[in-house]
Every structure is written in C-alpha cells, then in structure tokens.
Length: 263
Image (cartoon, rainbow, N blue to C red):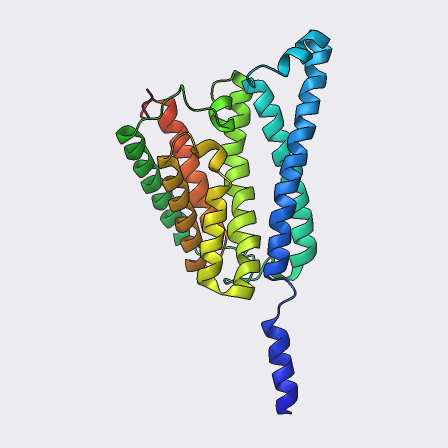
C-alpha cells in the first residue's frame, strides 16, 4: 500500500504539462513570430509591387522601414504566432484552462471587487508611467522600435497600434505569460522560480521597443510583476487582463492629450 501511494505521489510530482512543454511553447512562439515576420514582409512586398511597381519593391531593400511596412509585418507575426500558440496550448493544457490557482491557466471568473482593484492598479501604473516619461522624456529621433515606428504612421497604422495595445497585449499576452507559461513552469519549479522566469521573459520580449528608451524596461518589468500578483491573489487571469487593458488604454489617452512629453 505504501509503495502504491509513493508511486502515485511521484506521478503527481511529474505533471504532463510542465516546464519542458513551457520551454517548447516559448520556442514555438519565437519561431512562429520570425516566420510570421517573413510572411508579413513578403505580403507587403507583393502589395507594393501591385500598387507601385517592381522598382518600388527594389527600393525597399535599402530604405528605412515605413510605418505601413512595420504594421503589416507586426500584425502578420502577431496573428500567426498567437494562433499557433493558442492552438497548441489548448491541445496540451486543456484540463488546466479553467483550473483555478497557480497550477492552472486560470481562465475563470473573479470576485466583483477585483474590477475595482484592477482598475486602480492600472491607473496607478499609468500615473507612474507618465511621471517616469516626464522625468526622462523619450527622444523621437532615437526611437525606432516597431511600436514607435507605427506611432508615426497614418490612420490605419495608428488603428493597428491601438489593436495591439488594447487587444493583443492584454488578452493574448496575459494568456501566454501569466496564464499558460506561468502554469507550466510553476508546476515543475514552484511559484517563485516560475514568476522570475516569466517576468524576465516578458520583459526581454519587449526589448525591440525598449532598447531605445531604457526606463521602459522598468515599466514593463513592473507591469509583469503587478499582473502576476493580481493573477495569484484572485486565482484568476481576469484581473491581470483587466489591469493590463486599463493601463494600456490610460497610456494611449495620456499620449493623445500630450501628457507624455517627447524631445
């Protein structure tokens, strides 16, 4: 009897959905983003060839990426990588999707009071971001990350940027990082190691837009910590999604009414 119990406990301690599958999902995310970027570049080249001719396509090789080009590549990359990640993660972790707690993906409801907490957290985070960007204004001449480039585009490019900020970032990123990947690493390594890895990974994957504005790294790092705390406190991913959405929306509004200076 004791031997059977020990064997069962050993099976529980080695979850089928754990760190190795989390690492595999990270690799899938990165590779699919790269493939999506290549496909997006090809799509944009065909568009330019159809509307402006072959000479315009040849000129793209030595020219700075335009906001429209960056938007097409970014959207294609995001759509392909998100679709692939969501499909595979649902396949691998289906029983955990609605499991509450730190070992599940926690796609569950949360207490009503969490809405107020997440709202306040998002607004406070926005205030901190505005103060930070007033103390250390961003230099538009040095900002050349994807989102900064899209920010200089026309209406449709700006619309794509808003979609990234209000749809992809709060819903897809939270599902990927604080949901699936955190659950995978936590089931093998425990809460603290999983939290550290997810926070560092989330921050690193925003490097393309933050290398030209280093205070942005601190803001992304803090955002990752706060959303993880909310996810653990309420045993649900919904507060993290809400807080992320409120923060991004508030920052967009702050930029729109010129509360965020540039040099």
